[in-house]
Image 1 (tube, rainbow, N blue to C red):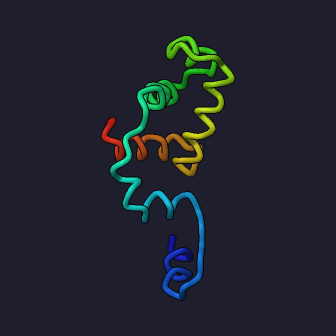
Image 2 (cartoon, one colour; image 1 turned 60 degrees about the vertical axis):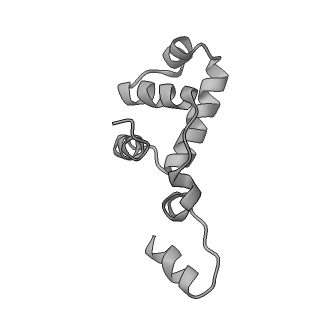
Image 3 (cartoon, helix red, strand yellow; image 1 turned 180 degrees about the horizontal axis):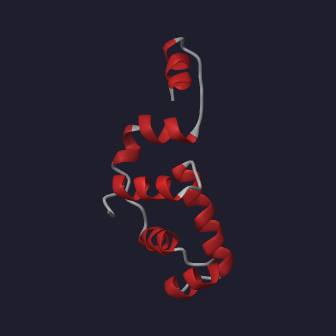
Length: 92
């Protein structure tokens, strides 16, 4: 984050998913689709992709794609980051 801010102050471009999420004003007002919210709960409970697919009525390949996108939004694969993201989305 500090690297991104120092690069921005110098007029340089620096990209990372964390700074995009934290510095983008549109990110705060963006509401996740309902399927993503359901998958976040399933991920928090530790469900496997097959179980998430059954719970959300999606194909396993679709679930895997959504989970991959969720991890890209979060910028991490840790449970702490997942719960922090859910708090910022107002889910916890």
